[in-house]
Length: 321
Image (cartoon, rainbow, N blue to C red; front, top):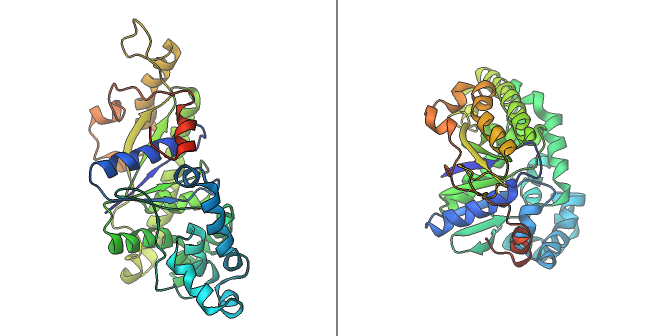
């Protein structure tokens, strides 16, 4: 099983759209895929399910999120509490035991099925609470304290637990555009990430920002692993995250243009992306990529169209384009 994230700290670049369709394509290739929605804006979740279904999921677990597992266990009817684990729950619910500092529950609630070979664990607006807890406990990982280490590695652990149970080939994590500590933990503990780009100035700066913070994040984790025991190191991935490449989105075919970019300005920005990657994304993160791979977007000369309103229609009907 490989854990992948599609990440850019610039919004509106088609990150969630790409993640959604990538997951469907892998599923159609007979790969078993789980999507974890770790963006509190819940766009991926709304791609996959009706709002009424999501509202019921949130409503059923509201008491736990607001008051905690211990209180819920005391105040809720035993059957109602136990039934929470028999239906789909959100990522915040799954992380709540670590947030509270109590033992993890033994039963894994089932994800929601989107298509053959494809499942989703939805998000909710309260996910920021877990991010606050990561920030609060962050320094504790350098001291080898068990709870901070659980807090930082729990998202990866959940991916592993669900994969062991349901035999996933890929777990794909959808993230917010933020460079905050939640994404610091996610991007630093997945196996690989790709960057979706628009052919514009903002994508160049997005790559620059990601490269710079990733170097800092990896330094933090490297220092941490030097100070904790080998047993505690097992909670972290064996290898550092790898940069998988980039995609170009929102280009359209144009007449008499060799590469079919919408305008010459778009093509000029596209040409700058490889050098921006080489300059700002550390070589150790991309050492497995050849020079040609760095200089070529995923999909080569294929065009990923903006599709005008088709993307919105795909979201409305909960179906891939």
